[in-house]
Image 1 (cartoon, rainbow, N blue to C red):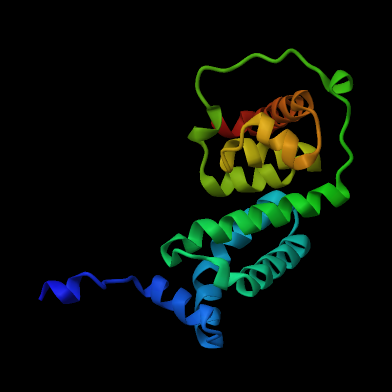
Image 2 (cartoon, rainbow, N blue to C red):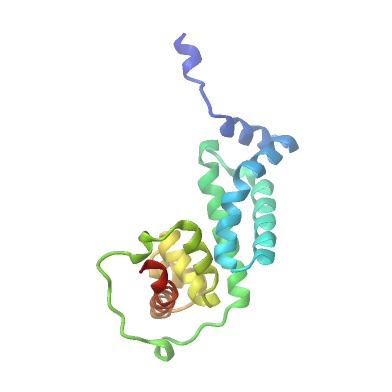
Length: 183
């Protein structure tokens, strides 16, 4: 009996294994299972549906092309998310022009509690999409993807100060936008 318990795998793990062997049906099922969540990331990062759709497709092409490199099939979701975030960063590097830190430096003070935690996810998602490109990228990476400002600066080829100023600018713009919503 114990012999059978050692080999228990999830349906997702099984699909990843089949996809690694080239099974198109398994790839299709994985796409169906993960595309909505990954599309949300793409939309939030790109700011529009058309670019998000392109980013999603490109991310899955990259993932399926490199799927054999994934050693632990149970890590597929995190591995795919990293691919999606990296594709969004790559995309933003081509399009964004960053302002120098000195040009946008504002009075930066830390708040005690994250005010955005009081909002619905849908409302926050829509509000984030309205941010200017640079602010949106930094805000998403810092708040939602848990990157440090140092990591953001390295990934986007900007200074750490620019990352911080873009984050604070995004926070300020979002706070102004939702003031009525919270009252």
